Amino acid sequence: MDLKLARKDSNEKQKMISLEEIEKQVEEKGSATFYLDKDNSIKDIQKMRTQLEKNSKSVHWNELRFGLDKDSFLYELHIINY
Image 1: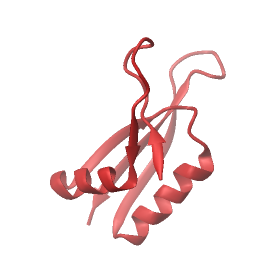
Image 2: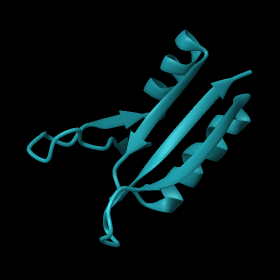
Image 3: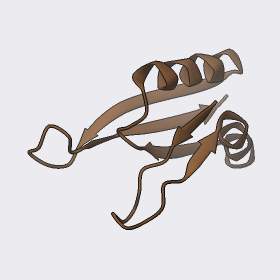
Image 4: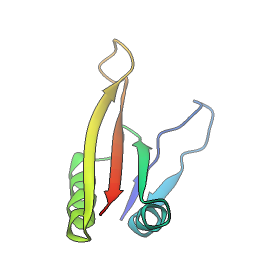
């Protein structure tokens, strides 16, 4: 399963990250924070969260709004290995 990462610049090409890459980063660092694009489906994020929780990870998921427009948001995914 792949999710789209949030862009740092509007001209930047869309990057994807897989569940395996996320787990690898969390294992190496102990915790990690990822900012996901608004185009990801909520169901996909929930599936990834469920899978990570099955693998003994604590997952905190928030919607971050950065403007007045209803489409000005992204998702924050904070994962802690325990």
